[in-house]
Structure formats: structure tokens, C-alpha cells
Image 1 (tube, rainbow, N blue to C red):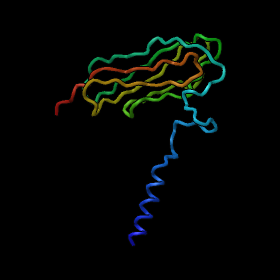
Image 2: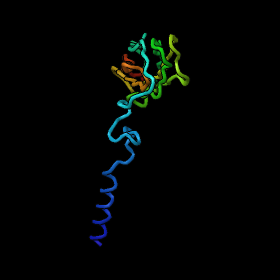
Image 3: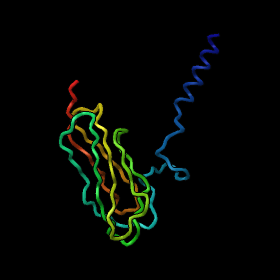
Image 4: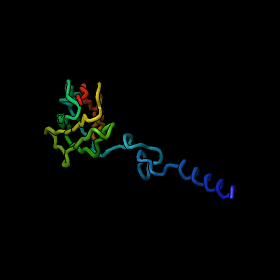
Length: 147
């Protein structure tokens, strides 16, 4: 009986120690991460906003901001992914390519519920811009809501 429990525990350990669900790998690229995969037809981008300071909000408020950028290159700017450092921050990317000379927006919503104190949330953008998009930063202070 002890032997069966031991074998079952070891099998469980072996299966749980190998995380086959890692999402930082791209199929067929070996050890490359998503941020190192070359995008076709690079273009350039000018950020008009890369930091937004919302100052102070009361816990529970939703902060919304649209980071502005301009495609300064000669090819369409394709944003393939935007991701935030926390589930309380939800970025939205343009669905269509941003044509040369046009402005684009990355909308970000931050839910301050349960996040009192100084806040620094970052958004990473994966696109065909060269050089890469800078990290976008949403910052401010969340004042604890009085009960």
C-alpha cells in the first residue's frame, strides 16, 4: 500500500514539474520568445503618449486612457498583441493596420478595486515597428475607499 502511494505521488510530481502550457514560446521557433520574433515589413512609429499619470483615484474607480501613436514609416503598422502586467489592466489594440501617416490608439482600462497605494501598470506592444514600441506606463495613486 505504501509503495502504491509513493509511486502515485512521484508520478504526480513528475507531471506537475513539467509545464507544457508555457505561453512564452512560439511553435516552431525553438527557444525564441514572442518579443524576439521578427515581424515582416517593418515600419517606424512615433509615440505621442507613453506615460499616463492619472494622479489620484478612489479605490473602485475605472481609469481609461488611450495612448496615441503615429505610423511614421512607409508600411502599414500591424499590432499583433498588447499585454498588461496585471489582470486589473486591460489593453485594447487596433484591429486594422494603421496606415502610413495615420494616428492610432491603444486603449487601456485599469480597475482600481483592491489596489490601494501607488500604482505602476505597464503594457507591452508587439508589432512590426522598428525600433520596437516602448513600454506603455499607467501610473498614479489609488486612495483606499472608506468602508
